[in-house]
Image (tube, rainbow, N blue to C red; front, side, top):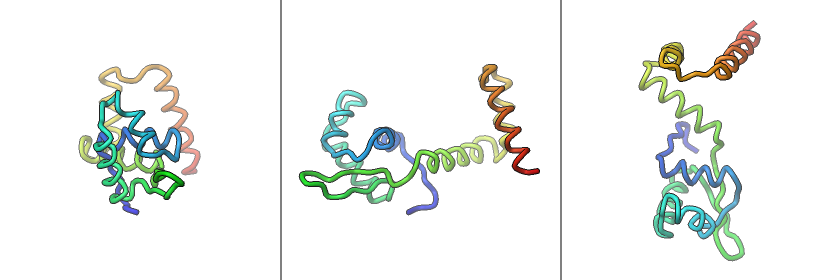
Length: 127
């Protein structure tokens, strides 16, 4: 499995379905995705093939069809994507990111309370 896990937007859509419930067959995924985002069966099949090759997902042969499973957790992907965002946009500075969110009023009172709690837990871990 790859160390760096970055998903394309289309891969996020499929992963959300597989994280929600797995395994799923190509036909199950196709039926879930044909309306929104409007993908054809061949598009779903192509994406699944690419994702297997990238080791993001894997499959097992089922009685009638391949059964697809996520090969990475949402947390693994979220960590990599978040670290990449912070490095790319905020030059590696978490405080710069938070400052931007606060200055632009993107945090409500509940968000701020949650951040205080998270930071308090981080301080306790480092003591």
